[in-house]
Length: 59
Image (tube, rainbow, N blue to C red; front, side, top):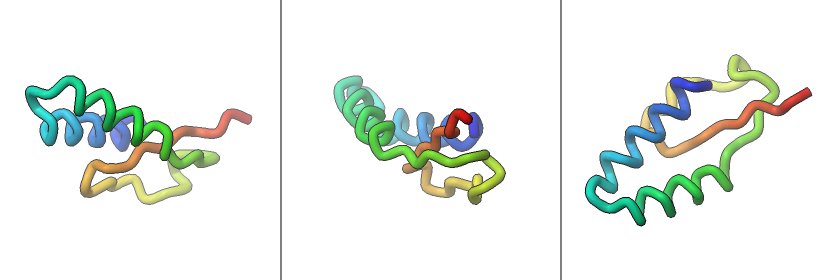
């Protein structure tokens, strides 16, 4: 999960380089849309475009 979400963080930073306001608004929007999954192994962890976040469901 950390690698998956880190890829998104790096992609957001690169797409919005020099604009902290855009970085902040994008990460908030992505966090609000994060998929909740039971385990990281339950999904494809490639995240090729770096536009998604996942959150693990706490038991």
